[in-house]
Image (cartoon, rainbow, N blue to C red; front, side):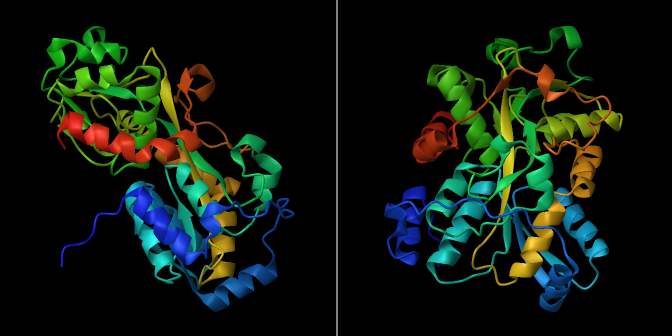
Length: 355
């Protein structure tokens, strides 16, 4: 049987049915709960559960490293990583919840708009790890304590230094429209990647759809994840990436691969990656322990040092050689607007790029 392709509108209808109409009215707001430290009692309760499911839009190697590091720290608790693009994760969770299946314990997504839906449906538990309360800025923490920003990165331009000289490399989004890049670029898809959906929203808002219409005429190779374009230019399959994350390029460059990062003159879309515990998590104690670990200085520093992600944890040291976010002109999104325009953005993009 052919699987049904779900739109956000379909998923919201399913969400509404599963929450007895709560979709149409905001749950009563409540103050965030007090910070929750990691106690021996929590660890023991988590060990009795013995497992948890982590739905993640982080790249597989990153999500797996988080899981294995957690397992080493807390023997006896296994983490099952369910990794996919953010938009696929959103669909899966909505389908599971709509069918009365409680399978997800903790989920992180590169599309912050997902948390608006999940919170409105009253699917998220209010849980504030102690590190979040003590070391994270208030603007990266949900006021009701249902989620917080676990990491961040920037969507950028990049190029292969063997194929492109630095003086010839594009410095802006406008430069990507130069005929010399015809058939030489790669970019990711907003229908798969939450990060690219956010970036597409930002570019259509700030540069306009006419810009994207012109870019589509450049015969751009289309891939799925925001992590795919860096790989394509690193391998020399394309000379330039029109979008993609900065962290892969930084890691590749530090490994001696022929790539370079370009923070566009117009600004680089900022991608924040929230994480939250689900209210009906089948392993609620293990879920809370993992959420606390995710936001700990140990895990946050690992994300910075090994994967070149950005952390908002005040005690985490920046990665050597990585351009600070404070030195980058950043383009910030509006999750409410992304949520409202999501289906239109994906449909319009697919039509323009014929994918």
